[in-house]
Length: 142
Image (tube, rainbow, N blue to C red; front, side):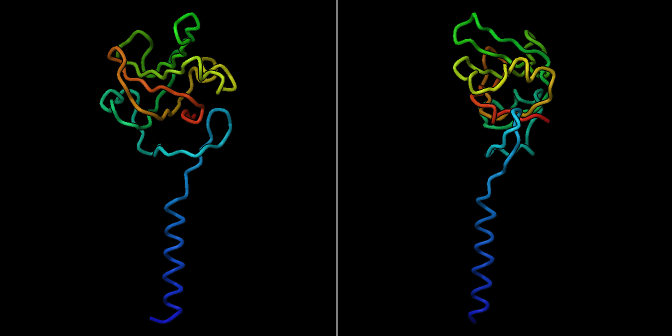
């Protein structure tokens, strides 16, 4: 094999390796860019989330109601998508009080009525699918 052909092969392989390790960058609700491991193109709607319990995936939908339970243990903030609380068909995002400081604005105010994508592990809590969020980088505005 000639040196020119070998050089071309090395360049092509290098480009392929670089392309494989490039991380997607997205803008979150704070206007900051973040590296994202989740493929948001394969996100499921909030009405389909119950079918994906146990999966680490992105869920999209409109935040129809919010609640900051500052008097409850753990001081959770709830972002309800698709349906309002207490409808068991809703999808909820939970932000625990210990993580509220990671958000530049109160999440219950900032995300209310917005269409968002949220990434994380879907679990069931009292029959309602939810994702716990620790950082604004897990929530993207559409």
